[in-house]
Amino acid sequence: MPDPAVKIEALAAALGVSTNLISRRVKSGTVPPPDVALWLKRPTAWRLSTIRLWCPDVAAKIQRGIDAEIFPYLAAA
Image (cartoon, rainbow, N blue to C red; front, top):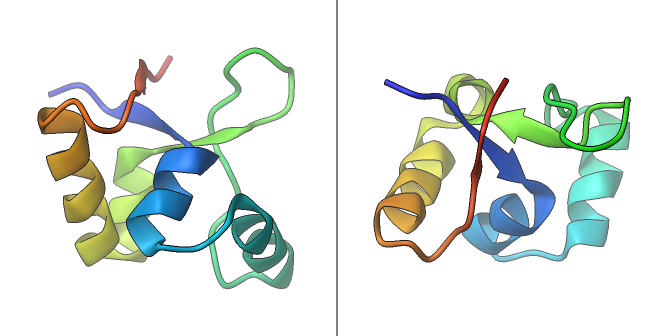
C-alpha cells in the first residue's frame, strides 16, 4: 500500500484550522514535523503513516479525502 505525502493544506483542512496554525503547532511540538521533501530540500509534507501514528482519527479523515479525490496528494518517495 502506498504511503502518500500529505501537504499542509490537506492537514489543515482535515483539522479545520489554518496552515499558519499548523506551522505554529509544529514549532511548539504538538504536531509532528514534516518528514517528506517534495520540491525543496527541507521536508514540507508528512507521510500519511506519520500522521496515523500521531493521530489516527485525522489520518482516517485524510485517507477518506484522498479516496474521494477531495485532497490532492503525491506519492511519497
